[in-house]
Image 1: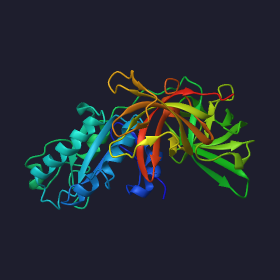
Image 2: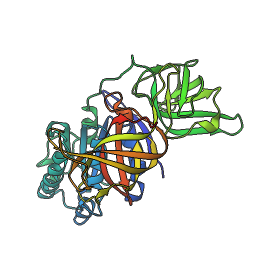
Image 3: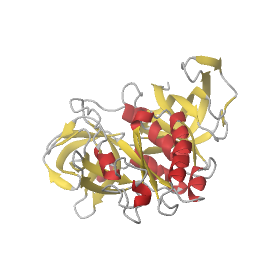
Image 4: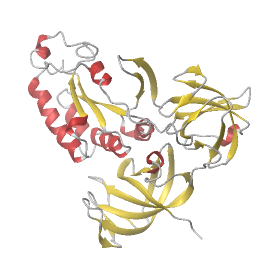
Amino acid sequence: MTVAVAYFNSKRHHVVLLDSPGHKDFVPNMIAGATQADAAILVIDASVGAFEAGFDNLKGQTREHARVLRGFGVEQVIVAINKMDIVGYSKERFDLIKQHVGSFLQSCRFKDSSLTWIPLSAMENQNLVAAPSDNRLSSWYQGPCLLDAVDSVKSPDRDVSKPLLMPICDAVRSTSQGQVSACGKLEAGAVRPGSKVMVMPSGDQGTIRSLERDSQACTIARAGDNVALALQGIDANQVMAGDVLCHPDFPVSVATHLELMVLVLEGATPILLGSQLEFHVHHAKEAATVVKLVAMLDPKTGQPTKKSPRCLTAKQSAMLEVSLQNPVCVETFSESRALGRVFLRSSGRTVAMGKVTRIIQDS
């Protein structure tokens, strides 16, 4: 299962909608969507039992999805509380869900001012693209509909003047022509047909033969655009999801040994020296081993409180080092947020999130 893509126009925005799967088995796919998002719609099932199951700390996915969004730098979230028809458009039910989810989102460091709460019913078309017509909802809710909430999302600043940087989320190959198109979101720079590019970590160089933005042919694309770039002069077998497209004069770093600053998440199993984890950065996933527990950190100041701890447990902040089985394209968080945000997973659960603080060159 992959991330579904759709496009529509609101009054202020051309919107690219990435519909990520919600099941726990597809969290890596959800991560792929979160890496490209400027904002998010967190859909909550309001029905009795379903919300409680989804919000359960051990089995539900709502908490993990929220953590993933925040970990990848998403700040603006529309919380769409769906299936309100099943609970009779109850304001009490809406307020209860808002209280529980809101408290958790605050613990994830989302700001109240960046959260928009929308009660709706997709089945009965209530509060989706227009104000609700059902008096059971309109009698107590006078806020924006979902479409208006999307329209109010603020566009982030784009790094158009910086060198090209595009993490590749998919590679589409043409078996008949032996060509490949690299798909993803331009994190920095701009491209047009004829632009020179490099694929990392292979180092293959070529040019852009043609490009599409939001599935439409175009002559230029800039930072923030979702594109498919048809590559010329590059071995199609050397391009895959998790690679990074960059300017030949500004190649991204490739590494197997990293120092990370992480927060161990609630409910996670302890992280030990030698722990085998799944390392996620942009669209890359790699097997990782914890090779050093450097220090525990004060969660507020980031200053070391204990050197060389024996293990890391839930809610602890720490510095650690990981060794990756294969090289990945990565930068320190201070150099590139897109290539410096990381997640660590184990046994189908996200156990820690954080950022790359140092790339270690092994002798």
